[in-house]
Length: 174
Figure 1 (cartoon, one colour):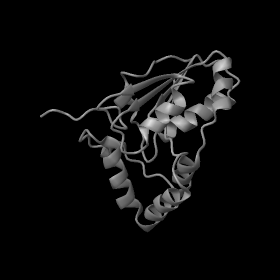
Figure 2 (cartoon, helix red, strand yellow; figure 1 turned 90 degrees about the vertical axis):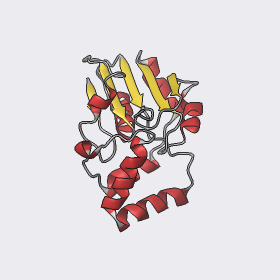
Figure 3 (cartoon, one colour; figure 1 turned 60 degrees about the horizontal axis):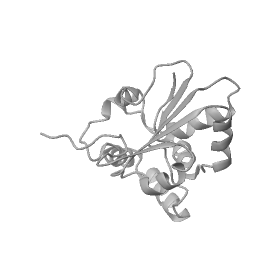
Figure 4 (cartoon, one colour; figure 1 turned 90 degrees about the horizontal axis):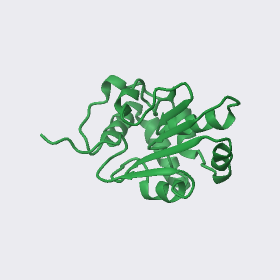
């Protein structure tokens, strides 16, 4: 399987073992990595049977001011921004993601925020025989999961998971 990491993360793939297929014909990605996984599948001339998009970063419904603000906050304090970002990624769980930390660049953040999902491109990947599965958490604090669901559901197999956040985890019971 080819896997693409989320923004400011590395080796988080094990967190999604319940969703992934260890298969040479599978491509997967989490959040920003879902965008990159899709582009990889879209451009690939190789056979890909399954594309798994885990909480795909979806900001195309946001205003330009939102994107400018995110970039400004990142530039003003990269460490503080990433710390808050990872807290929001983990919500509603209290999972500590510090072992997966790999601080991203402003260019990566900008690419993630301005990325556009296009219906036509998704249809082209589907026409090649690739199954696309999208997993979204209803309590996601990173993206507007409902807007993402409304976009992906008519095109792909889309799972909208109640009480789950961006990491597709629920609050841990103590």
